[in-house]
Length: 143
Image (cartoon, rainbow, N blue to C red; front, side):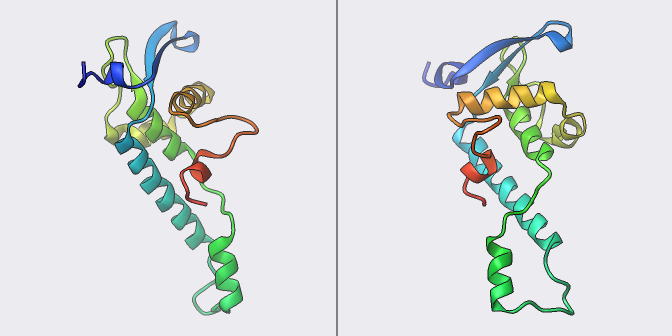
């Protein structure tokens, strides 16, 4: 019992009507999942900040550098949320549906159904999701 991930993680069986009534299981993220999520979130934020950095031939002053490092940036969240789904979506036999290498394909196909499943994963993981909730990227400490 000590090694059974389904006993040791919150999880929920769901019926996905949009997928012809398929039964899936979503589970809370593990500590390792959170570490990788934070790493990916930090990388996404870093890349977004590089995109808004001043051109090399126009160096910003100290004040400009501080403002850039503290400013909020918009990131493309589908790859992050696809990662969450890849790690936490299980079939009716509690086997992972996707491998880590599937993240780009899941991100490309991301839809409101996927978003709803990711919201449930965050809920099971103890993170509020949805309108009015703190952004999980911010909650992960990457703002």
